[in-house]
Length: 399
Image (tube, rainbow, N blue to C red; front, side, top):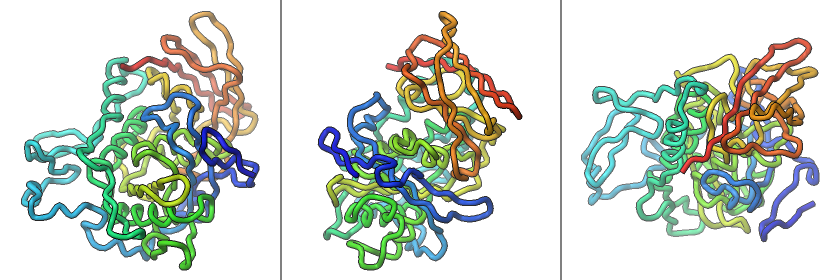
């Protein structure tokens, strides 16, 4: 069953029997199974990057082995002889930027004596409002000059997702990881190539769980695209690659798994792939993000919440709250108290199914209320077997 909202086609979890949303990879595997679709329609709550422009998204399953990514520079724009960066070699986690020509650390990484190191996320509860808003603005800032996507010569040509567009998506993702107290991720050239090929085949074929397993007869099929589809989150209808990250983090329609968010907030995630193609089916775009990379050396907390303890942009706090890691499961209950007047606000605890992001998780579903900037909310999550978790959320308005 389909429903129309604001002129966009959306799939409603339950109507089609597909409520999962992302990869369900057992521990020790590189991903298996998966599929399903969750759709994010226009309108709704305010979100960073205007994620409401997106139409739909889906998680995936599959393996990355056997993917021919086309060499170390696959998926990156061919700068050509006139590129002022063509003769510049930057170190790890850095890229050449023009105007002026220089090496600049990737989003989420900071310079230290000529090298680029992962930014320290610190302790979320100890951040100031100014620090959070500054990081939020950096995650929203566009690094694109000119076109974000350059179409190829033919319909099935993967085209070029420009470096600025990839960096925008990384900056968006790394802001959310920083907010949760996790280390930043890098992109990987081979994964970028697979994600770009995935975006093309996803754009030209029907949205839904089958998009993760395109058959050789599918429009714009390629072995590289099929491999990418089997190891990526997939979104349709996003305005650009960065907005697709918002769709996956909101994870609307995946109320039983929140699998997209759980993979993006997997502490060990690294070496992601970013792809985006403008055109195709009725959604007008498709985006893929390969998320099976690992090896992040950043923090791996026993548990963490999203939004975290301390300050968060109010738009982010209005998404569904999730808690990851060692959290109560059976019989879990939560109490949310508004500290300004002591009002106890009703919430429901839902235990997330599947092994997405290889961590247990629960969500707190608000019953008839939304967070307000300037208020503080104390959350207590507990269960018969524990462990008890307690923190405070402080929504703020960022300029």
